[in-house]
Length: 334
Image (cartoon, rainbow, N blue to C red; front, side, top):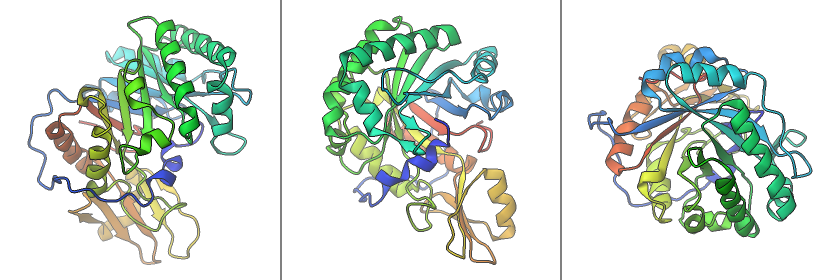
């Protein structure tokens, strides 16, 4: 993953229909003692972002490696990853290496590369061997799979790949998988995921419940507003994945939509606050901040206040935990 994951997740999130599910609009009050939190960190961001959130985290997902164009090999583990693993372990945290099919030559996830991997027994074996080696050599506690832009033709191959990876990794090593949100339980099969079959190999399913709106794929709106999050979580639970294996993804970053109609950008939470100043407004329905600047630029961001409410909601829903993208962009997690 060589660009922020959140810039690549909005395409499927467009047009998600709201479901009739209860929304959380109160202040966070329910106990979250049993809720585990994963924080993602992009290589290049720096290990200094781990310590401020360490007391709230159980795991750091470290970004990451990708398939090569042949579909039979994996890119080199970034040099910075070693320092991130060391920093996480010094705080008693587990780590997972993120693995995806992001293709830098097209600046997007590549279904063609994924097909080369998933349709070939030889390629799957080679990639499994490489991932097992990278996990061991890098001191990771496991791997998180982030294969995106798939379709129904990938279901059988993906199931085999995860089963083969599970068999090859030590039993103590974890496997999780990240999935873009869809509006129906059946939508995951269309995206190449046989949820029932994957359940045998996957320890945690991360629902990327963010990028509902974004500057290159929708008009201005919340990054992951609460009504939408509630609807996609309900659809995800309806797939039959045990709640004890579901981590609800939460955004900690901002997007802009310039008033002149040019492409917007991603900002850190701190940058968004600085730009918004006294124009910042809390949207109690979406449970995010927004601001419209003097030049017409619109900003939306999700921060610690959003996360606190999402913690309470996830606890009441009985899911396993939260997965926060991304530690260098947002507030420290308390």
